[in-house]
Amino acid sequence: MLPAVQSQMEITTWEQYEALSKDRRVEIFEGAVYDMASPSQEHQTILTELLVLLRNYVKSKGGSCAIFPAPFDVKLNDTPLIVVQPDLMIVCDKDKLDGKRCNGAPDFIIEIVSPNNSSDDYIRKLHYYKDYGVREYWIVDPQRQRVIVYYFGQTDLEMEVYTFQDTVKVNIYDDLYIDFSKLDFGI
Image (cartoon, rainbow, N blue to C red; front, top):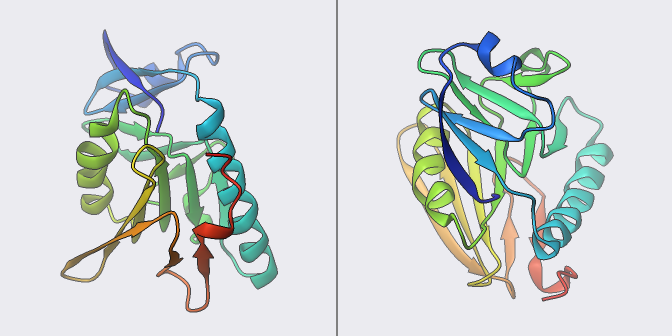
């Protein structure tokens, strides 16, 4: 997740959101606009490593799932308007994709923590992703060199904490494991 700074503007409709400058990266939390800063080199390195690994796996399966890196909008709700741009996501229901965004919850999301705004990933987005139907949510924290995995089952919230030396199972798949110790994060 990139650092966000709240602006004074409030967006209550999708049309207002689409009228914003295309050069401006923002997320909308219940109508409040949060500008997003540019990612760091460390952030982009982690994003690239995970994107390549996940893309290769998804492609090898030949199924209906697709992977998207940020910036790619996810509209979780219309009223109040909630629009996020997860660092990485997997969407398995192609009906949620309209060529510009994902309308509804992706199946799998990874956010890479930025030290300036970790509460968005650990608190705000955890709440939204659970409540709006994301099946699995990972928080990758480079500062602490850990991965927190939330799997939102039918009734319970399951959470596991791993280090960058561990192998982590992607729960939405039966046979996908990511060995963080073999990834080249350059950190």
